[in-house]
Structures are given as C-alpha cells and as structure tokens.
Length: 327
Image (tube, rainbow, N blue to C red; front, side):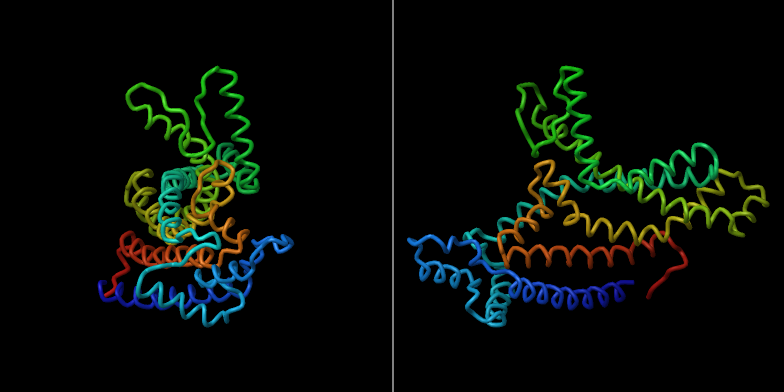
C-alpha cells in the first residue's frame, strides 16, 4: 500500500507541475496588467509603470516564456509566488485566504456528506412511498436552484426572522461583526456569521449526495448477497446497514474525496454574497485585476486539492472495501 501511494504521489506531482505551468502560460498570454493603468491620463509616467511591472515579472513587453522561467526559479528556489500588479505579496494573500475558505467550507461540506448519505439511504429503503417522493422533489428543486438564488433567499428569510423576533440571530456579512461583552461572545459571533453560509452550502450538498446515494442504495438492496443475508435470518435493519449501505457507500468515497478537494475554489458565489474573502472570491478578483501570479497561485492550489482528492479517494476505497488490497 505504501509503495502504491508513493508511486501515485510522484505521478501526481508531475501532473501538478505540468498543470501549474500551463496555467501560468495561459494567464500570461491572456491577461495584460497594463489594462489596470489609466493610459488616458496625460500625467502618467509609463516608463515608471513598465519598470514596476518588470520588477514584479509581469511586464507584457517581456516574452511569456522568459517570464515563466523567472517565475519558476522564484517558486522552486525561494517559494515566492510573485506579486500582484499592485505590489501585494501573493504568498501572504493566499496563505490568509486558504484558512478563510477552510473555516467556511469544511463544516458545510461534511454536514452535506453525512446528511446526504443518510437521507439518500433512508429514501431508497422507502422507495415510491410518499416520503421518498417528497424527498426526491425537494432534492431536485434544490439542485435546480442556482447558488446565488438560494443564498439570496436564505438572506431574505434570515432578515425576516431577525425583524420578526427582534433578535439579531443571523449574521451573514463577513466573518465577524459586533462582539458582545459576555463570556464567549467572540465565538458566538463567529458562529452566527458562519451559520447561514454553512446552511447554503449544506443544502445543495445534501440534495446532490442524496440522489447519488439513493440510486446506489437501490442497486445494492436488490443484490443477491442482501437477499441471502435476509434468507439466513438476519434482521432487515442489520442487513441494510452491514451489507447494502456499506457496499453502496464505496463509490461515494471517490465522489466525496474529489468534492472536498474542489469545493475550496468552487464557492466563489457563496463567498462573495456572504462577504467571506476566501480562495473562490480571490480567483474572480485576480481575473478582473489582470493578476497573472494570483490566477496561477489559485490554479496551483486547485490542482493540489484535486490531486490530494485523488489520493484520498484511493485511501478511502481501500478502507471501506475489504476486497481492495494493494501491495
């Protein structure tokens, strides 16, 4: 198993290098930092502007491949991912925003996984009953609803609840706000700001995972080994948990691993609407600001997450499926 993982990690490292290099070259060809400059201003010193861009290694007058070589040496030898067109340090920005995304995403994602599997399995066991149909309709509605619409609806409902009760229970702009003077006020304030975006992320995940899990569960419920277990006298609940659910969750392990890996840069709309300055929001801002180094850093982080998800998928499948044994 260890040799297998090391071999896969080495292959993934090569893929990550290629993907990040391509991301830099594509950004260098497509983005032009000089677009941030007001060229119509007669008082602007273009020589100073280009000198500054050269210092940041993002001067469009230099060859893209020459800039790539400088950038690569800087990353490999100094772990310096460059600077934005405004001179901000990419390492510092990304280092801060990653943890913002972690705080926002991690709880909502795992709640979505847990309840998605639970709802999907429960719905499959009650196939074609009224409860199954209700769950199916609600799930399809949530899946079909754009993220921006769902987030805005939740904000409207939260505002109505706050106004009706006279209590500012829901806070949904930024990570923190006005902190009270009672013990634990800072923690309560953060939880209040975290609640609504977490619900927004969880609802879509629950709906999506439940559909996958329901279909997988239906396949295993009719399998021979489940019927054999029931014929031998095993109780229905135990047969479902130990045989049907365990085998139905194996394909979900791959889905879980890749979803966790990609969700950090896939929540840009949620981060923007709720005022969380994470990696998703930063990707949008980097493209708008013609930030070559910023886009590359986000692409590298995204690629690392995907490849980490691939490795995690292999580990999870080996853990939940006793038939998988890799030497």
